[in-house]
Length: 104
Image (cartoon, rainbow, N blue to C red; front, side):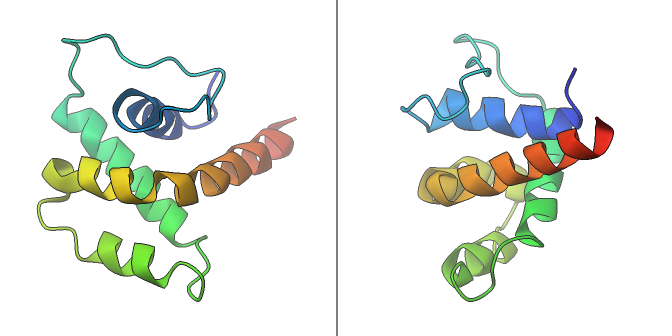
């Protein structure tokens, strides 16, 4: 069971839309025709919002600035993820591991 379903949605969104590598082996992309709902996009955005607080402000200045500048975030979210998914994967992985340790 996922610790935070919104982070699992974020992983699935990345896997479905932008990641060609097997970055999350336990996550499968959505099948064609099964769009992400507005509520799911809001949950994904919230997950990213939480991750931005963990991002290093010096090494991730561009990513942080672009995230905070998102206009209509639920519409433009895929462009942000397309540009920064590789930087986000380690943050997501660290977050997931940290919360699994706390629960165990």
